[in-house]
Length: 248
Ligand SMILES: C[S@@+](CC[C@H](N)C(=O)[O-])C[C@H]1O[C@@H](n2cnc3c(N)ncnc32)[C@H](O)[C@@H]1O
Image (cartoon, rainbow, N blue to C red; front, side, top):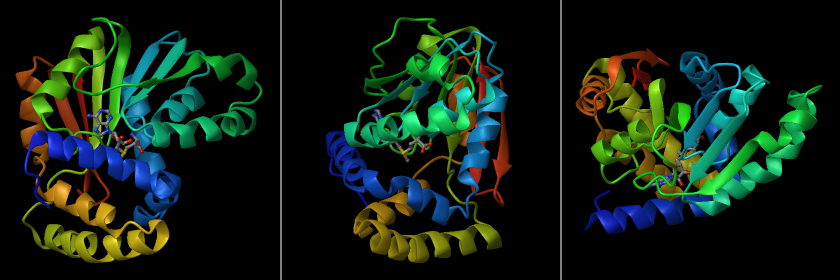
């Protein structure tokens, strides 16, 4: 899938997520055989948030990373989920009260108002410098029009000594398994996604965006280029998903 301009991609991604919002969570669980929540758990563990910490979840979508942060740490003072696709966040807002009462009990009521939602562009985050103890994103970076710029924004709003975490599907490697994964990704996922969401093009964009994205080593180099230190990554799900962590 090619775009005629950055503005074209920006708008396509925004409208596409609005169209699939109502089926996004279900498709994630199916495509990853339920592993996606485990990856978010690892991301929050790697964030090493202090008890009263503040987390920014950039491109929060339906809020899974933000929810997981509170599941692991009832003491967090504030989590902001930011995204430019409001229908994705509406799904999350509707799920939040149930999550609070079922998963965060007995502290749910105390936590409930410590999650905020913000309509925001990842390339122009509406937060002051040095605001968060950690800045996380899940499955955002393939979608932005300028990776370096998005990273620089995440670093800007992160406190010194805080962590920037990126969970993403890297470009599949040119190995036997990488090619098998490509086959699955390009053939099975659009078919199933089309049936479940009625939006086959969205699930054709997904593998195409991974093909056009960076390798794990290239993303690490980009993180170092915006001055993150101790950048490391681990590969998950047979190297098809990467979790990168860097320190500001
Ligand atoms: C694949 S979803 C990931 C949602 C969530 N982080 C998760 O783990 O499931 C990608 C999200 O990135 C958001 N997104 C893409 N480009 C963005 C941008 N420039 N600014 C803000 N959000 C963006 C989309 O609206 C979408 O909700």
